[in-house]
Picture 1 (tube, rainbow over the protein chains, first blue to last red):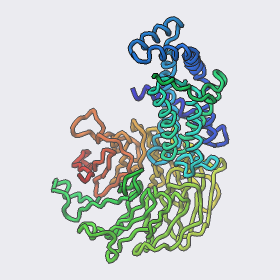
Picture 2: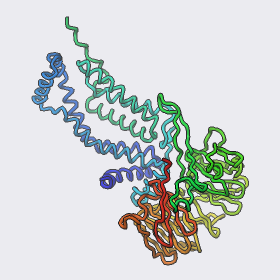
Picture 3: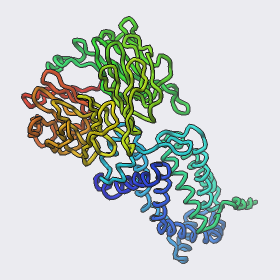
Picture 4: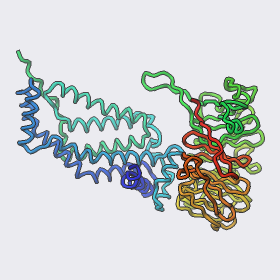
Length: 248
Length: 347
């Protein structure tokens, strides 16, 4: 299974990254950016499918909110009515999930490729050699130049700059897609997630090699651009929904 | 860890007869609310033993001299009366040390990933000198010949340094400035070294000429062995090559079935090759014909049932191999069998 994964997904991506580095004047940083862009472009059809599905769900929000108002007390009834609504509109609420699942292995492979290509320790460099194709362009790229801008891609960024970029871009992306809700519990969970994930990744940025954090940052920025082209700024500029009037 | 081969072959309780274990750790502040955390330090280079002292370079950028006398009595480190020391003597560190330390006369020489070569006093650990920054990174073990040190760098340079003061007396780079991955070995005035571009280079010392280069299908990761004007080079393309040191002609090659990440050994009249898979081959160095030492428990499995990435050593016809499973294996080459194995874990 591991061999199959390496053969079909990981090795092509890893060698692509090293070859790109060779083409891009030996810069591993530029290669990470280029490979992230290429992979995201390849995945655009799936991303669009996911976004369209999300957009359709967003378009139904007023009706969903109406249902929430109407059946706020009975979760079971609310679920039934919502499923009915989805069925009538021909929207699958899980429709945005499977494109994401298909993309997931690709993200893992990209992550593994970057970690392997940076090869900071002797055993990781030895491991890298054993996964490289016998291409001239690949051999000439090694060892990869791990310096990019102010970063040493093999070590965590000691400044807070990359952590802020990763956390900030992730927050923007999440804010664009998270629809406001009248359900106080859901709203509270959304707000927590909107802060939790960016904070977590910003924290990871301080712990992991900055090459990986660069990938997160670029991926987030591309995600924001694609999202903007499909749905505009989404819910970024909008405040939260007015609170339900208190019942007397 | 110091292991007594005789005691291990008799399966005596560890430690006996000068055996010892000493953990080199580093203390760092734990994450968030945790207190200081003590973690073991990685050691990649082969320790250099000189008399009662063992010299070690660590990946966290420290150099240690351990006394076998003090360690076998489990005394506090460092016992300065036994000439134990560590460098730098403060909490500071130099760059990661991956290559092995080398002792010559009253000094030890070490290459660090901060791009410098250090010379330290053998008995006190005081710094004799450090070179200027030679490169971005080097994992090279210095090769000492006469009053010169030869080292290789990741950015494609070979340097000869004066052993007296660390000044550069000679440097060489290939035209394409391809980095060198293996440590250099010098024989009859020629440096042999593996490069990132999958070639083994032969460079004439003190000149700027490549005598020849020999292409493999993957990298020559390990330091080559030179004997009787023949270069024996392990390659990650699964082969060991015997190459004429004078003109770079291939004499023979032997397929070990998996990458070879460690240098071959000459034991008596045999060439011993340890593949990464754990298979050990005994080869006739003249003909390239050899055979695998069988696994004592299961013939279908590699000789030792563990990956091998650490350089083996040999003494009196016995080859000692440390497997990635953290066991030490002893192989009798003449008998062609594993004679004992010992776990290198302290629990």
